Image 1 (cartoon, rainbow over the protein chains, first blue to last red):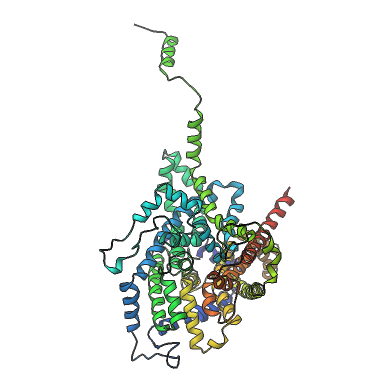
Image 2 (image 1 turned 120 degrees about the vertical axis):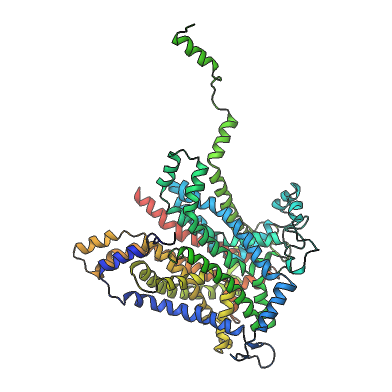
Length: 331
Length: 290
């Protein structure tokens, strides 16, 4: 996987470039305007954020300016962030665990969908692809608040979960009181005894829902590339349908699984919307904490150090992926 | 003792279990087993569409209290009144203006990048791929807060608004445009271009008559995606908007005091318009084929 060039990437581009006979600087001329934009409004802001996380000052106190000095880097901002959002209340861990559960759910829901579109849809394929991205076209805040209706206490879904005893089981999944504070991720259970809205499950479902297309599309892209004859060869050689899937289809779809996981897990870990709209008032995640420190408290350095902590997790995950699979599959 | 082959055959047949057609349940069971994947896919689609259906349905509701969460009474009032609410009208207008500018700029910049990546080999490919991927994977809160930090450091706090929102939207739309257009370029048959050049078309003619028309559907799809991403963005806009109120900002602000059904009408309209834009060319193509 690491050595072979990705299909349709470097090698054919090389052929075409030579056959068209372009000049060496052409690609750079094509790249530079867009890349300049990304450098100015993505890279430089990220550097400014890191700088802010080591500055002192507040937007609402004193003269509202920030001071940064290489001689006195304010590492204490990170100390504050960790004591406040990791130890005193486990918001950092909670964000990662909610995002992890949502990513697993996304994978479980998106895989059969992507598989069906890639292999079973026939002439409905294009229509199904349109249907996958169609929900994108309605306001996502409105779609998220729609879950308040679907999961309201008197709704069919919640009534069903209650009468089948599912809610009791989910409510029983909790972090015991005897555990230390920094592990209290579900202190009151995954759901309430008779409600889902404003519980962790509602937030996790909302995140799952919001990021589902980001899992489905990369999965579909990698499933679609699989040569169907490889699967046929496996079944011709007397493997059962399940074995063929386990030994051929799934391993070949792994690039899509990993890309989808990155595109789902990382943005989900910083999502402020679902916790704010579907969660309990005290159930805030990293996204909400960053938002509040910026907007309500004006403590930009603390908020910036929280953002950088998230960024470190992201860069680590992406780096691990790139070491294994290279960068061609990413875009 | 010997038996004839006919006798042996009869014995063997008698030993077989009586043949009968598989029963209804057996057949249903088998059908379910072979279509299990499709069941899960249908469930996934239902999961994706349920909230959209709720948004559309509740645009016809007359909320009993402030909150439009429970069904009360059918009415088309929200649909007929939607543009009489100044707040909604100006928010939608601002969102459309921003989305138009952001789409145009990001489609141009992104398409150029897509051609460079899809059609050329150059040093620094890995870094470029990574820089395009990162904005798609970074949480919006991080991008929003870092842009706000940039604007604050550049002392632009006072002029946050249309300009800063648009700049931010262009930034995150570029990556999605690149991915969409690049996929289309990768799927092109390069022999078509070679054929054109064999027939004495120069590079420019080949590009204008063959390459560009073939890539165009990808560019249109990218524009549609960029428009809806920009129109719908809340988190980054929330950091870069200052006092400006886009449609998602309006919905967010209205949430605590109850979202009016008119907002659902706008959501439903967006959905219908997008579906029409996507589906009409497809239908036209099929009709022409027949």
